[in-house]
Image 1 (tube, rainbow, N blue to C red):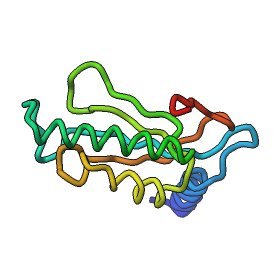
Image 2: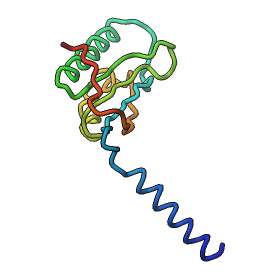
Image 3: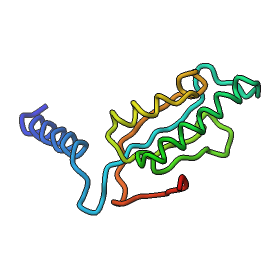
Image 4: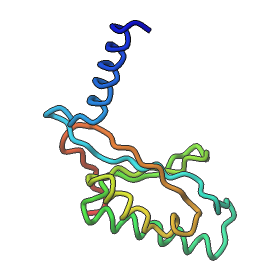
Length: 129
């Protein structure tokens, strides 16, 4: 590789790395999306235990919503491996901490995958009030 191509590669890598860490544009904010997936102990079977876990899961969602930290939550309707999603208005670390307190996650019934996400400032869905 020639010296100029090597420098161009280094500069391009730096630009991409900087862009990935950049703050959002003025009219946007950073949110955290959590994808709920079938966990290692997932079962479609409805038992007294799974019903109790689901009740705890829904109570935890309401609690996160009432705190204002969770602004959107809902299930996917295609019965696939992705079960639902959360959108948080907190840091990635805080989203992980509060969402991993979910009884469905703690039980292994669901697992979470998190991604920082930009969207318009003031994103809000408030079904908890």
